[in-house]
Image 1 (tube, rainbow, N blue to C red):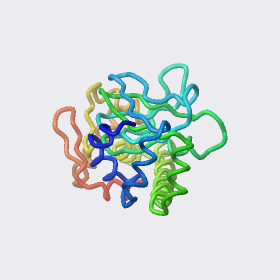
Image 2 (image 1 turned 90 degrees about the vertical axis):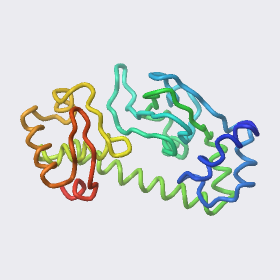
Image 3 (image 1 turned 180 degrees about the vertical axis):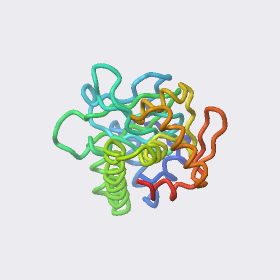
Image 4 (image 1 turned 30 degrees about the vertical axis):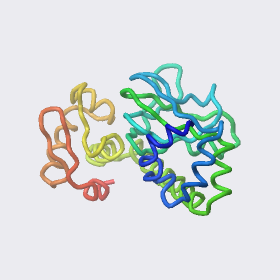
Length: 225
């Protein structure tokens, strides 16, 4: 990472959950090393494929990315992240080899890549950063537990609630492919989807406008899981 890049993205970096509260001089020293670099991908391009790249943790600096399981075809969508989002933490500290996920730009996106060696140097140099890493890994575990719940949801209402929580971006899900495709993604029929959406609307958890669903109350959705 260059000196100019640290100035350009400094507010995003130090305002993120990964670097919040850390000493700037300590972090900057590592950021300027060879193990940290800014990467860019056009829409549809890969920012990270653990099978061919060195394990790294990524901080999204701009744009929007989607996290997929690795697959010969498209893979399963696991998460959607925008500016300030952090991903691939597990690939850095897990000695099991290649990461099981890949990071794909949903639109033109920029990210900070921190290599495993640089991440370890940061954790060793700053207690604040060590706590940040632990907190983010704990949140990842919680998120994955919720993701498992989405795969094992016992009814349409809970399935839709989990799907909205996991796949909305800034509280909004744009069903550009239509509600039939959305029903397929949730794993229910279209009529069941409409009933679930109507019930969530009546509960005040969401609002709908054409193909856009907006989350009004995340807590109400969480209580349905």
